[in-house]
Length: 257
Ligand code: MF3
Ligand code: CO
Image (cartoon, rainbow, N blue to C red; front, side, top):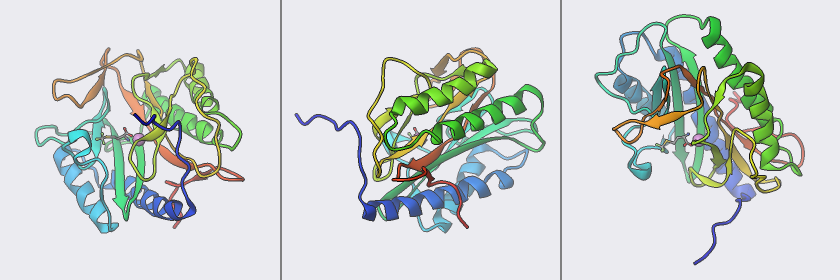
């Protein structure tokens, strides 16, 4: 049997398509949070996402993936990732909402995520958690340089979490991305014996730290998708796709217009 490659190098033609899908995913990631209001169900948020995604000319990259039933992932408070929109799940002022959005257009895939507080400004330890997770993501992306290893990204992300004493989720990791939603290699948010491949131009990585206010431990709910923290504390998730180039990393899900 053919061995799975350790990583994928995308052609310039593929990168054109990936760039477009990533920009579409970025547009939805930026527009959707402003449309989320207290009193809405997570199912309504999923439906709004469906129409925003359609407006980009693309379709959901998550719907049907391993049987996933939603358009996007909507994870509230102690939900870490993979929350499914539900008509009976009403979001309230102060809820911490993560939106994970994948868009497919013309064979390219964009994947990105953000976390925010509904209806008010984040304060206190939640504010710190959100800022820290996003700072760690940016620190990781800065390491997506040719000649570095995947481990350099992991190390930069973990360092930010450790300084703030937040729990780093271990069961779910970043990944190669672009033509398929999940491509090799894995991109962990913590350091281990895994060094991963050396980075070369044309690699596209989705870096996605998930940090918890409390324990790093998580479990999967009976719906077989929703991942929650073991101790019920709040979790945050931020994600961007980055292209390794001959020069600076290009954050593909950074909205250009
Ligand atoms: N950004 C997430 C990931 O890369 C979203 C996957 S959700 C799924 O794992 F529904 F598509 F599985
Ligand atoms: Co992802």
